Image (cartoon, rainbow, N blue to C red; front, side, top):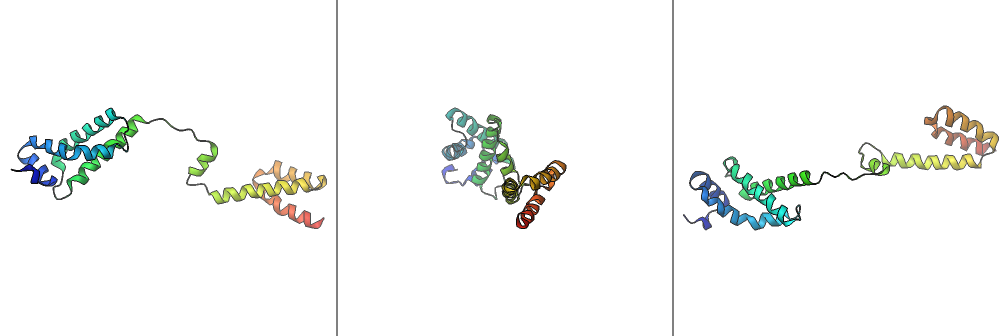
Length: 166
């Protein structure tokens, strides 16, 4: 049997059914390719060799689960990808601290437009209050800001009506 002329899928079947020593040919065919692929995830050469070795061990152990009707290359690259992810999870457990604004940005539930509109409204309210006479501003601040801080936006409409009346 000329193993050089066998497809990867045929070689996998031959390894399962006839000669497990043929697995060296799989290693020869994929060592360079998988090494280049894994280098995207693992920079250190020694660690890269360890991950690559784990890929070949897992591929060998799971060779009987390989469906020869499918592409062998896709199957072994999936094993390599999963091993790379396992290595990343194992070796990079450091968390990066985020400030409050970054948490708001990555939180999918937050509505950034609503948050920005609220900030702009607050700035307009504060500016309008600063321009009002004390006899109008103080009752508004006491009523809206102390009694019910959730209705701050209502101040904006009150401020406009007071400004137009004076």
